[in-house]
Length: 295
Image (cartoon, rainbow, N blue to C red; front, side):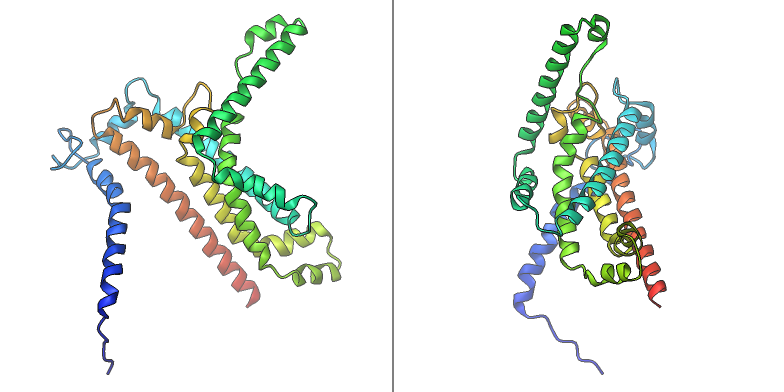
């Protein structure tokens, strides 16, 4: 018969602190979830007045002049583009840094430095850079006498130009650090065995390296999408004339005074959890596939 040992007194202060920390971190999210299901007469605070999907219906109809659907698709498109670029560039950089590179340490610190720089400064700098590019393009068009092209030219600031670059300054360092950790523990004997069996470098990567690092690659993809999905500061000055969903949500907090704003917050959070769920499912499937092959 097992005798259950009692917890020492020193266990309870950190346990209580941790519980309060979890409540502080996730409590507001659950409050928003609950209040988004208010009835038609509900407000922004408790007590709740009924339970319904009324405010999600109102959200689908639109919030004033803001096109929530268009902002949602812009954020999804940008998130997918950032995810793909982060995965490809991180894997390529991880492979490159497996060998000693001239100036490799300096290059690494330059990439990682964007993590410690204030996000709004990065956004302002990228916005200024692209405005200078605009001035250069307009001057070139004027010098070439291409008046029609000059009149039709708007700006190089945009979703898949400046905004994409701004988001990559945030996601790439994380992807690169993950790849460094992965390849630091990677056994090169697997690749050597593949080469001994006649595999080309590409075949060795596709059939040996990539399957082994696949769970980490999926994780990098999740980081890339989720970090882009809710990014505000680096997007604010570098996106041009359109807004992503987080920017629209930030603007609506001062104008929308109904639970529709909570419904929008619930929707964005559900998308984040959906991406994390898909990621975990992929990692689980890859793990089972690897065990099946080894068994």
